Image 1: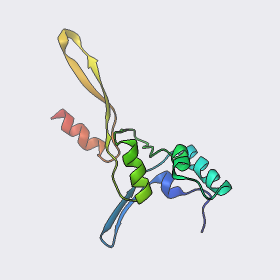
Image 2 (image 1 turned 180 degrees about the vertical axis):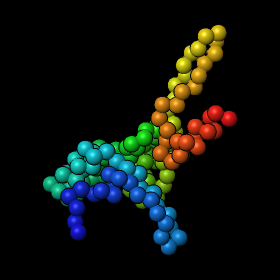
Image 3 (image 1 turned 90 degrees about the vertical axis):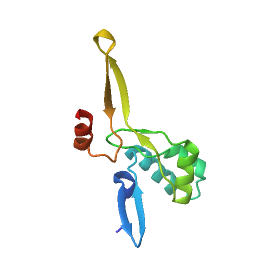
Length: 121
């Protein structure tokens, strides 16, 4: 059944089939909708035009993509590759020269509870 939007891009997906693993990251709703409308209006979009509309994944829990833009484009073009994502953090200054490292956004993969336990030990 055809869908109005490519929900696999919106929600992301992961799985293993016949020895091949895949993980499709989630993307921003507005960017996916704009890309879908552009593809309906003009079937033959260049890669650069499509990347301008859909620049990369958008993780709901946050995180910062540190892969180079060229690596992201290569992964999208070939269907193979990986993205490097890290947590966002900041340093809070305390009294007497002490400081706290505060994680503000986690990357998509780790379980938050497990990270919390590791940080407390």
